[in-house]
Image (tube, rainbow, N blue to C red; front, side, top):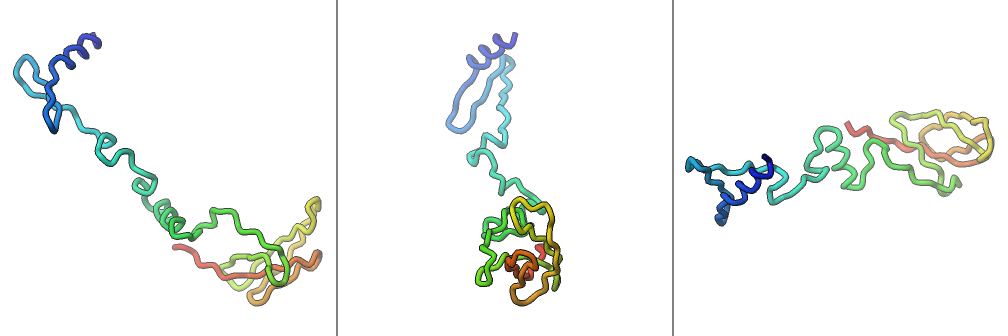
Length: 135
């Protein structure tokens, strides 16, 4: 049945310059539905479909910003000249340092705004940097 209908549709199709029409036996003209994916633009991109917070995040990433700390942080040497950067919305933050790779104990200390501070155990330097929330 479906095969006969397909043959009938192909036989009855008349092509014009802009649209495809189908003439039935009762002289009624039927035009196929135009779907959104069949438009000249094609499939919408993520930026075109995104709404709300997702759209905000995509626009910020496009401008080179990381509003919700989604990307891996940049690694620093931990020296006095190039300390590890710790983002914070206040003036102090509790930081945990894993001094050695195979160490199971974490050394916790308070990091205050201002100059870089050292870990009391291994000597790595950390610096608190003020971070604005995106909303």
